[in-house]
Image 1 (cartoon, rainbow, N blue to C red):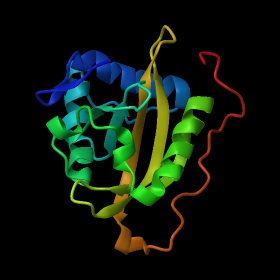
Image 2 (tube, rainbow, N blue to C red):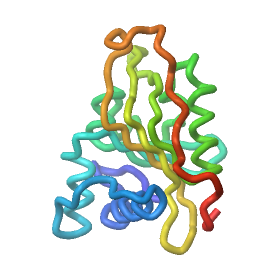
Image 3 (cartoon, rainbow, N blue to C red):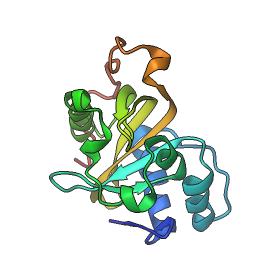
Length: 182
């Protein structure tokens, strides 16, 4: 699996292809409109310019982040060096761990889930919502699972939506059975 190094992932074009291709293959829609000429341009755009947060963690028993684009870094308040290797469970608010575990389990079972909304914790401990989240398995063209990725298209401080709001609505998988590659 690729790792964060120097603002890019090792094998950045290949990792961008894994993100883009697995999203299209598993979710059934493009992650974003094509805006680049080649894999390196795609990697640069996803990392530096994408208006959405994009994260990925590995397949370890306690999954660790291997990728966080600049938008995600700004939202969570971590540098790329701090994100690399951070257990992904630490991204959720302490009282939202069960909620986070549920979406990870849903993705593990069905390959993806979308429509998620959850509370997350910044490095400084302040809380915020990630919204319009789609999470999917990072599976290459040969069926090898590399981890999971998540895109969040909007976010807000918890005070913007009120603390009493539910953590998320039931995520949709638009599928009722496991994908063939699982």
